[in-house]
Image 1: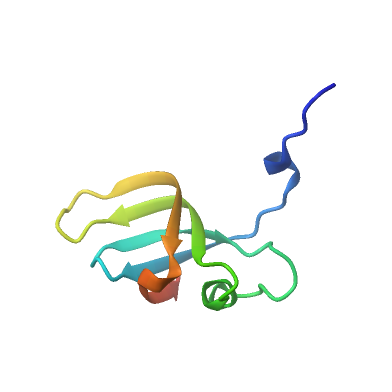
Image 2: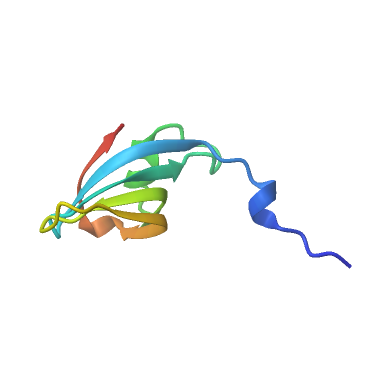
Length: 88
């Protein structure tokens, strides 16, 4: 019996956003808007109070105290720590 891989079965509508966090760090990455009805814009997903964390993929973190960006495949951001969010 073969095990199915759900990540290959799901469609992704990735949109780039830039987040400024309370830590002073900036984060640029993609969010998936292919989550069902009511998620047509990045702001819909960010302002949704049902989910406390925002999942980003293909992420670049720009630390406030460094000129060297950090690349990550995936990052979870607590929405309480988002100061600004700008679509790219």
